[in-house]
Image (cartoon, rainbow, N blue to C red; front, side, top):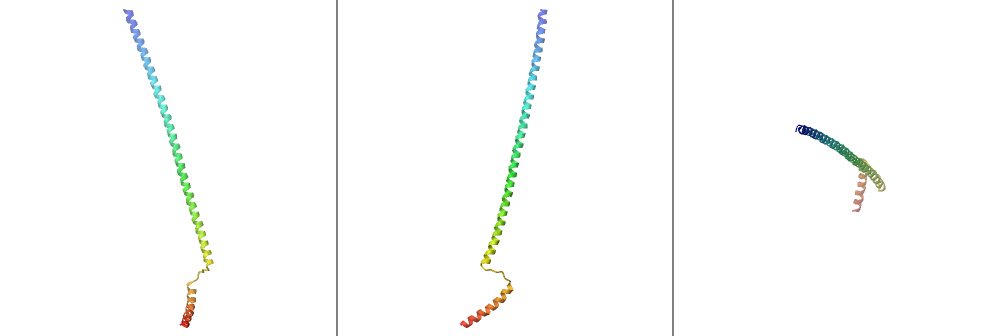
Length: 128
């Protein structure tokens, strides 16, 4: 019985030792699993951050392109307005020249009108 008791004690100690080793192995596996998950999560975060930065850069580029297009359109409209104003001014001058419209001062016109009015009055008086 003493030998059996000693053997039983040795078996219990050995079982406890094996169980303790198994617990340590399980703990080590759990730790390795946690570290692996942490690395994967960190890699996902880095990937998500890089993707977000890329999307932001694309949006900024798109906004810059829209601004450049707006500026180009404004410059084009201004150039068309300037060209139209120039053509309009040239056409107006040509039209006035073709119609013999001459700018004159008010004082010259008054003197001519007085002479013409006298002639017109005399002519009408003769007719009556």
